Amino acid sequence: MFDTSWIADLDADQACAEITATQDVLREKEWHELRLAGHWAVLNDPDSTTPTGGDRAGVGGGAGVRGGERAV
Image 1 (cartoon, rainbow, N blue to C red):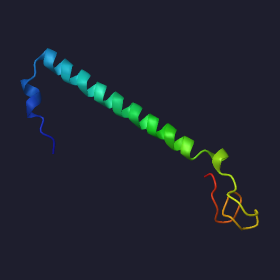
Image 2 (tube, rainbow, N blue to C red; image 1 turned 45 degrees about the vertical axis):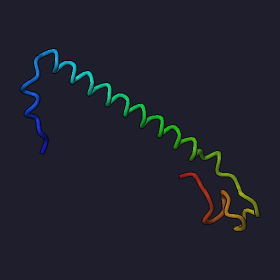
Image 3 (cartoon, helix red, strand yellow; image 1 turned 135 degrees about the vertical axis):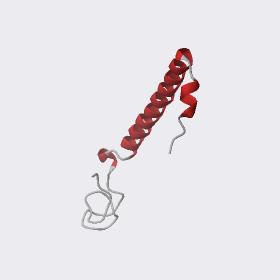
Image 4 (cartoon, helix red, strand yellow; image 1 turned 90 degrees about the vertical axis):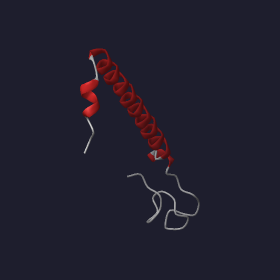
């Protein structure tokens, strides 16, 4: 499944450097995910679901309209 044969060839300093590099990559990916989640939250802010026109009885497709935009 995973080729780990290269690990046996590492000395202590090289193993430490590999661990540090892996942690740096993981940390950057986690920050990337958090930034995307924050952006998603802004795009899907429940306060942004406002009527888009028409009345609230079913015309226009805004918030509060059956089948219209709503926060979940």
